[in-house]
Image 1 (cartoon, one colour):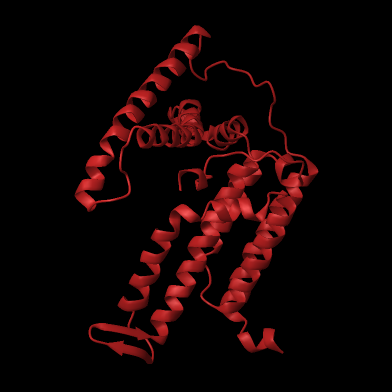
Image 2 (image 1 turned 90 degrees about the vertical axis):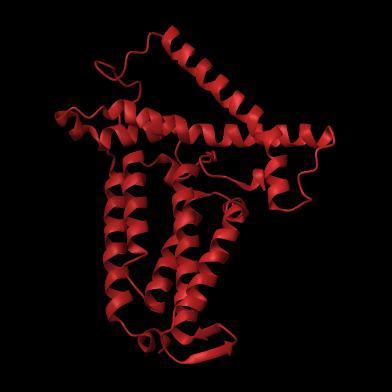
Length: 274
């Protein structure tokens, strides 16, 4: 399960998405996530699915690698589906047994919410798959640059977010190594009740926290040794500039958001069927 977590990881490839400006990918991802909540009909989901499929194709990231990142959140998806399925009481009753009741509205809401969460995770992952941590830091800093006028430490905030994102795969790899080492020493991490399993996690959490603090200290010492003093007066090795493809990407995303809003709310399903 630890190996299946792909958030924060970069997948190197030669695609048009990898060459886009990081600001374009950040804004486009935000617009796409917002667009998932602008419609409540099948035509809207069809448009969102087609758009996501095209983006995945253009990214050249293997679909199996993208789907692997969904495994750690299956439990969250199941909980969301169950809550919406049994707690929504709109429409005709489809099933009733004891205290469990499934209605037409509950089934529809559960399916829609599950699809939205899956698309949300995939859309967010594609941004990290196609953007290096350095590019992500530069993009966030450039987008938040106007906040410098009100004395917000934009550079420091962007660097903290980038370091936190970069530490995720490192800590996951460290966790996997610690778990294998403890299992090799006879630790039982699978059996027992919830309390026993929680106690069994102590030999993993303690060295993990020690390793995290040691890495943070090493990073701080390395930054201090390189005379890092914040963002004031710093220059960029690779300044960000909008290219023609970046402007085209903005137009495509805006057209998609408008289309999914209009089609998802005002175009009936029978128009698509016939």
